[in-house]
Length: 180
Ligand code: S3P
Image (cartoon, rainbow, N blue to C red):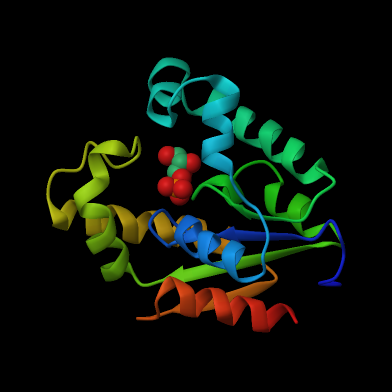
């Protein structure tokens, strides 16, 4: 990928709580570039929160809108960092679609299960896929199984970053160096 391209897209993916949006914000500051958060764009497009879309229209509808909004963003003639939703890579041919763009780089933020559990525990009620899990054991078991199913899709990303205890700013710097 040519990092000087005027339409370069950097696409951040990974499980819920992996820091896609937080790292995206840091990277946007560092490059500089614009961060486009896919979930946020879906909410604007549908004029509903993600939870409302899941509750009122269901998961299939959500995944279709997610793909449609993703296509709109990819067609924008501008540089951007795009933070996907945790499930985006796992539906339709979304990963092959994203990897087919010459001016795009897909980056998987690989975060350990205990870290995901500690980040997601306090905010699980806001998340449609987690809000029925009551204990931290349930959450750990769910995330473990879910990640096992999703990893094959995440691993289709062109770059993999194993995130340990680095700050979002440090990860953003790593990504910048990776793409130079
Ligand atoms: C989802 C992740 C969420 C959001 C929706 C579904 C998923 O995005 O798209 O709740 O399937 O993992 P974040 O990963 O940004 O929380």
